[in-house]
Length: 174
Image 1 (spheres, one colour):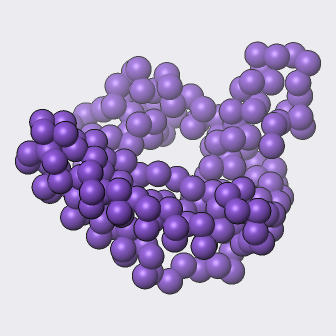
Image 2 (image 1 turned 90 degrees about the vertical axis):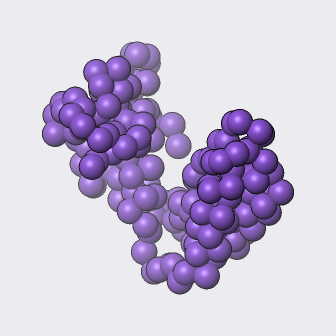
């Protein structure tokens, strides 16, 4: 089993392969063009921007870094509907812990109310938050997740520059 490079859904059988990336179908492949563009951005363009973010101020609390991409997990349910998500937070470690605690509390209050998936996903998402809170994170270097996010932002900026001839690659929004 593999996942779609565009929507991250699990692909059980087949899928659509383009430029070495596997997608659910041609529609996801079209949406995933930014992923292919991101893969072409040289590391020399990505690394300075990653370190600029890493050494900057926290966007949430304006405190000192190091800044990185952190994940928190939440679920909510209502009778026959359950929705679960992974939320990405570019922030300092303290703000990331706060986001995880809030999402765990949110899930504990609002996750149980759907049958059967709310009863299944609530303990999973709460456990993922707890695990992320107690796990030691390497704060000596930026995570690969932050590098990937910056690469995607640069690719999106380059795509916008193609649509707007006034903007250049060097003028990618930060």
